[in-house]
Amino acid sequence: MDPVVRVSGGLVRGSSRDGVNAYLGIPYAAPAVGAHRYRAPQPVVPWEGERPATQHGPTAAQSAYPTPMDTVLPSSVDPGDDYLSVSVWAPEGAEALPVMVWIHGGAFVRGASSVSTYDGSAFSRDGVVLVGINYRLGVPGFAVLDGAPTNLGLRDQVAALEWVRDNIAAFGGNPDDVTVFGESAGGMSVAMLMASPAAEGLFRRAAIQSGNGAAVCSLEDARKVSGEIAAHLGVPATAEAFSALDPEVVVAAQTAIGLAIQADPDPARWGASVLAGGLGIMSLFPVVDGDIVPGVPEERIAQGAAAGIPLLIGTTRDEFRLFLVPTGIAGGVTEQALPVLAARYGWPDGAVGTYAGNRPDASPGDLVCALLTDAAFRVPTTRLAAGHHAAGGVVQVYELDWETKVAELGACHALELAFVFDTLENGALMAGEGAPQQLADEMHRAWVAFARGGDAGWPTWTPERQSVMVFDVPSQVLEGPRADELAVWG
Image: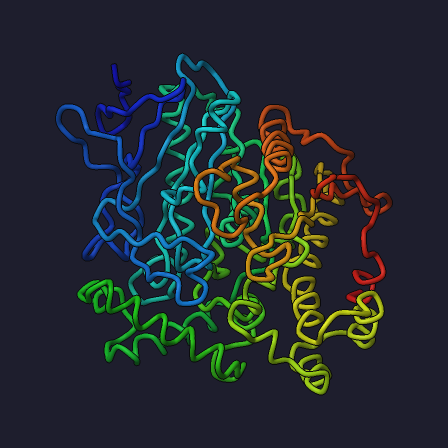
């Protein structure tokens, strides 16, 4: 018989397979459509009888990944009203089990918990209740518009965590034993939540995969981007005007402005904090508003905002290859372009020489990928780890070094996902055929152990002893890998 659970909106009927109960597409808030698309999340609208929860709900308005990115990143476009939803996977007969809440990535403009890579069955198989959440993306989630609250996407995440607190016991989860984890924009979101008073007390542990605590912009700069999107649409930058527009039209406009920022990264036009916080690839993302985001998360965490929260944090070795190799950008970099790029991005003196010396066979494009990886991911990850440790927090650090054979991506951004979720069999496009199940067993086991007791299974990281679990075949713990490269960033 299919399992039935009562939640805040009513009864939901899920499905059961191999000892795991799945409840998909459960609303945690009222539909954010029309005028409500630019308002704070509202209480869920109750329903009569049993609501089917056997299929994922709609996704927040977004576009599919463009070619050639769509060959390695699954798109998640499914328009509809009830996109503020959660999906829950729980072992049959579960009672007071640890809970993990997953926040998907996608540069704050794409993604959904319905992506098959994020299936929570393996976590539930291993004694964890897994919750995947959706939240507002793009303009509705992160634009700064007159008449609209700021950071609505983060406010949705807080509302989803409150739903977990109030409802997860019905699925056999312990509301006092929650780990929040996310990748890329989801990892950045985790850092925001660690530093946000609005999320205080809603989780015990945090894991940040390929994110950082510095991806924020100022209100002033965010208004510049929002104003450009409004001008592109021919409407004022107000919630009233935007709520009257077709969501797909708004998505097209935000895409056009995002491409304009990448083509002409002029700080006078877009704002320095947009270019720096967006890592050169994001245009709409959280703003420092003095409310949900009181300050730069990295700084607040160093001041002790999350001192009691154990942190698992790390990156892949070759993050930026995902953004530069499939597009052909890396292949077009010449040796003569390296000093020009160093000046444009503000790389420290000697950085190119240090990286080139460690990679005698690397092409200029390979060097750019390595430098941008560290500038955008590894260096801020290390700063966040150091700040959390200094404030009394416990930190464990990892790096994925295993290289996929797909499209010369190496150990690129998002490669770890199918290993962490143990979903290689779900069509992991990026990992490719023949990806090592042994590595999935290791990484998945580490995340489960962290959720169960706050210890992923290797020594904690400190500035004096920078222990890093390097996941590969075989995996090993190294002390301060590539320390000379980190040192050039100060």
